[in-house]
Image 1 (tube, rainbow, N blue to C red):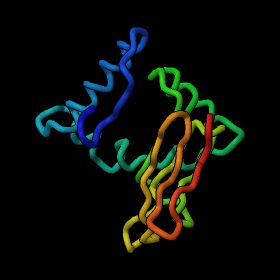
Image 2: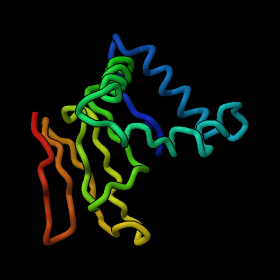
Image 3: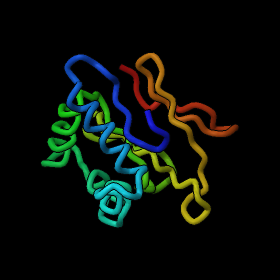
Length: 137
């Protein structure tokens, strides 16, 4: 995938989603593209906070499911929504993962990397915290 862009696994039934991802990535990185300002502006997806308000009930998790189905994805990982406590938050049955742990000193100063391997998703922290398994399939 493009550095700093959307990524999706390529598959036979995901051709439309892959074309959309490629198109969005091109628009995001090309200042001459008509959608450049919309993608990077204050109302664009980089600053979108809607999914942070998702709860176990209600329409937001249904929206997450629709987006995942549209892209043929299993989970959605989102940053730019600092989580109180400096830890990743899983919502909507582990289908939505909010990973902004507030690395900036202006927030929580927590360092964290997300690792997805063999059906296990873990948060990796500097010592002494180490690895925290968020969930396993």
